[in-house]
Structure formats: C-alpha cells, structure tokens
Length: 618
Image (tube, rainbow, N blue to C red):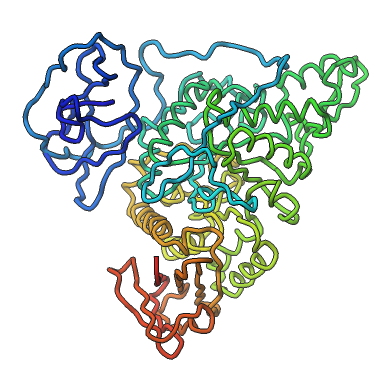
C-alpha cells in the first residue's frame, strides 16, 4: 500500500492509503508536492519520505494523467508512521513546466545492466506459464485489469480491447534519434524517453489506447534500421534492455494503454547467429536450411535477401526449427519473463504463408489468450491472412489512399467507392486504418491544403469502421516525405513535443485529433470497430455515413464537406438507419445541440472544409 500526507493517500492514516495499481484523482489545492511511503502490513519502508512533484495545468478544463513507478522499497520492522513533513493542506497545481529538449542524455550513476548472452537453441524450449494473466478493458475505467478469460469473442474474432481501440504508432529507433548503423550511436536507455519526456502521458491525454512500437530488437551492424534482426530475444542496446522495455510497458499499462511490438519474422539481419553460421560454413552449417542459401565456391554461402536486399536474408518457414525459433520469440515477449506486451504487429506478413501464421497465432494465444496479432498486408486478399485461426487484423493499405487523395482532388466519389469496396471485400474483418506510417509520406506533406483538410482526413480515419492508427507527429502537423537526402528517415525523425506545440497549426491539429479520439471512445457505435458503416449521401464535395451498433441501437452520423463554401445535406436516416420522425440526435462537439428527424431525414448544414457528428443513444 501507499500512504501519504495528502487526503487521497490516507493522510498518513494507517487505515487509509491506496493499493499498488490503484488509480486516484487529485483535484484543487496549492502545494504541488506530495510526500508518501510504501507500507506492507505494519512495516514501513526504511528511507526518507518519497516526494511526488505534480505538474501543473493552466487550463481548468484539463487534467494530467501520471503513472508513478518507484524503486522497490526496503522494509523496516513494525514501527510508528514516518514524519509527516509539511502539515499544510494541499493547495493545488503549480504552473505547467516547459518541456526540456528531448535529446537523449545518458543517466548519471549506475543503472541496471542486462547480462550479456548469445542465443543458443534451448534444450527445452520456452514454455508459457499455465496461468498466464491477460489484460482486458474494465468497463467505466480507462485502466486495464487482469482477467483469465482473455476477453476474446467466442467466434474467434479479435479481442474486444483491440476492436475498441485507437492505436498510436511510433517508429522506435527513429523516434529515439538512433536509427542507422549501431556503431554511429552510443548505447543507452533511450527507450525511457517514452516515460521521462511525457510521451506516454501525451498518448493517454490524446485518447489513444494502444501504443505500437516499431522494431526494437537487437539489429545487425550494417543497417541498424530495426528490420535487420540480430537477436530476437534482446532489446537493441541503443534503446536499453529487456528490463527497460518492461518498465515502459508497465508504465503504459498503468495508464490504460496496451502495447504491441513490431515482429520482423520474414527475414533476419546478417548478424543473426544462424545467418552467420551459414555464411561461414556453407552447406556444412546446421542452419543451412534456415535460409535460401547458395554455395559461394569458397566453402561459404550467400543468402537470398528479401526483395533483393542483401542485408535481409529471408527465412525458410517450412523448416521446423525456424518455426520453433520464431514461436519461442512470439511467446517470450508476451510473457512476464519477457515484457508482458499485448500483441504483435507482423512485418510483411503477406510474404509469409498463412499456415505459419496459424501456428504462430496458436502459440501466442496459448501464452496470452487475448493478445492481438496485426499483419502488415500491403497487397493481396486480406481474407487469406486475417480471420479465425489466423491473424486478428491487417494494415488496410487498399483503403488508405482514398482518405487523402479524395481531399486533394475534391472527389468524395473516390472515397465512397473505396469504402464500399472495402465493405464488400473485407466487411467481415477488423482492419487497421491509417493516414501514414514509417514507410509513407506524412499526411501534412501529402495533403495539398493540410490546413483546411487535415481535420477531414482525421475525421474519416477516426470515425470510420475498423481500428484507427495515428502515426506519431501527425497529430501535431509534422511534415516529412521520402525521396530527399534523408530518404525514409524524413518520416522517422525525433520530435520535441514542447517545441512542436509552439506552432499554431500543431495546436489546431492536436485539438482536432484529441476531440475525435475522445468522441470515438465515448459512443459505442463509433468505438466498436465492427459497427456497421452505412452510406447516406455523397457527391464530389460532401460525404456522409452512419455508424450503427450491432446490438444496442446506437447510431452516429458523420457528415463532411471538402469545399470552401458551406453546404446543406439531406440524410435519409429513416430509410438507412431506422430512425423515425421525431428521433433526437445530439451534437457532442457543439454542446449536445439537438436536431430531430423530420420527413425521414436529417437536414444538416455543413461549414466550409468542415464536418459535423450527430449521435443517438450511447
């Protein structure tokens, strides 16, 4: 338990306090520090009082979410409570501190070091705990709780937490400022930036519920971009260690945020132990069949690289030992022995046979029954890789283009066609939608009029069917396009959030993004990624649709206008959604103003380059 001087922590009363993992709300007051200690029964930890300094918020309508992680306490024998410190009443928030420059600095003093080890094939492979615990979302509470049932649908669909989620994606090495050959960077726990620089707090305030971290396993020496894995069981030393990642995941979980990692299982890097052995020993290597190898005439071998990339040797997924190696990795990071992550994003999943993903899914869900498996699917029929017994979801590249090109061309016919095609072909799947990612031009560079149209792109992303994914920096109007001197690094730069928010366009973008995220989370028809999406009306300049919940009758109507002049749309909600005359819709983003169905229609006045969202039910 935690006991402290503030009333929310029991006021040093031994019968008060809060338990490890509890979430409390502190309001009002003046002092911005709280003193506290850990207590185990009658034993108080031996040390001076711990002190928590609270950040300030200037806006009375705003709040700050904090995850507090303490070093393990050292216990005393039973004794009297500690000194009470300042006895003055709690007096409230201090001014909000200015974020310091986020460039990485190695911490002073000793830190925990991951012991060095080289992967060896285990005599007995990794086995998951029989009583592995899993996270599911607690109704009415943003923080997760443990549930042995796992929270999966009975028919094999994705876990509810994923279907109801909003994903925030970070390309880890670029974000931490260390993408490239590892020899160019010092080692260090850069991954801690997610906690110490306020990024997890930012993700939580924004409204996202899942953090997707790009590749962070130990990479090879020649490339170092994360997709060239050298060791599937270590965190890259530029980022920290397994323990570093574990601390970040724990902090995310404390804020109600799930974590999924990028798994690069189609190919390795050249420094992977098996690749090294084959290149040295050729056909005499015990790992010869792990890759697609060809003898080089000098006793060694060359390895077939993915899409011709020499540094990315393709794995042979028909080899049982390869499969076991990758399955062990999948289970390890999901387990408490690893980092207790909640799922995987699987790189170039379309390049790997569905049969392998079926085995991978079974192994992962044996370890954590409600984990989510998301495949990168750049082309092909998504139904071959996503579905019961396969992957839970996939990246919806086939829909992504229309989100932005329909705005550049003032052509919502394209968007409607793409939405209808998506529903016809993949309406039974829960796909991940996005505006951009680490491989794609950033949305503010892609749009020809980002100032006017970002809000519309964000609206269709965050309120459409499926699971939305926002790429870090897009919510603060960051720019970046491939093809220049930086190549893809242009979309993977470090980002100082405090500096970014000095720009008016960044403030406008983050406000829009947060409003839409919280709107989605607050209404069941929007929140459920599987709720039906019903087209209502469309033209070149306007497009409207309804999201209809499958069981509780809740409806959300989304109407958008990409033109520079106002527009009026008449939406046949009686015919399309069963909303009878007199049915009341409210507008959550405008003070819950009411509008009633009349003549079977909602008549909606749309602002220039704007949208309106009307909801019925919860």
